[in-house]
Length: 288
Image 1: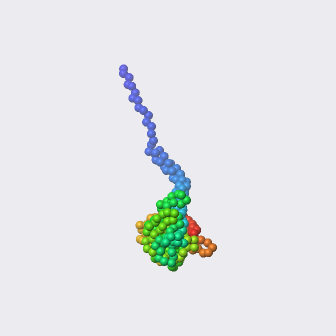
Image 2: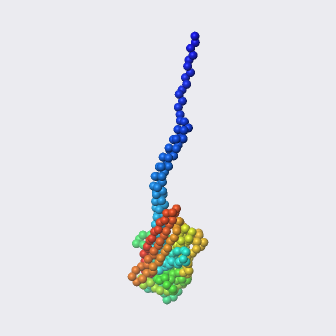
Image 3: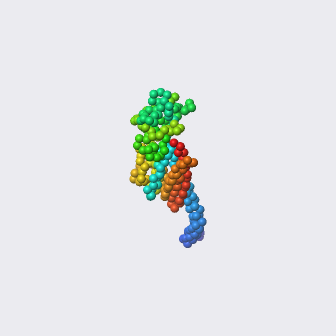
């Protein structure tokens, strides 16, 4: 009599579809609850990051403008306004010096009674106190010379014939400067000073173009006082200093006998609903 061996059948384990659906529903409920509590701090983090970025851009922008203003030719700042646009213009300088007022050799002084073509600067153009002067601070051909700029009619560096163009420079114990054409400067400087305007940046301006950008543009001399700020199309190729600009304003308060000039700037930047407004003041030395 034969005996049949029983067949081994392993016990099966797993999830039923009902159990799986329940797990999904529970995890969804937990995830939704966690998301509600996490959304606010995450949104706050991104908002604060946007505000920090806007603040950094605004601060960098006004500091850049401030550095430029500190090297502006005395009494050359102007801020035309055509209502919808705001801009600020000035003449930047690269260096300066003192001219020889009393003649020690034929023609080596700056003569204000004639259209003079050459004069001596007291000191060297290449060294100071035994140290070399950086090339970008040396007087070079093409630069312009301004003397006692008062920013008024007849004594404004913006006008035709009020600045002389450098033709050649010979450095030594005294530096001989030759101009391309003779010029009769309107007024002598009480301190015998002159300023040098860079050939490549004769007039610098900043304008909010109305398209969300703040641009830095350059122009050449002579340059009549504009009736309004340049439009976006006129400065479209100029470098962008800041984006996301909602508005900006420049206010120039000229000097009097008791104080120097003051430039007040307000810059408002907006990004994804976050807005940062920065106000900054720059004191300008307008002693010509």
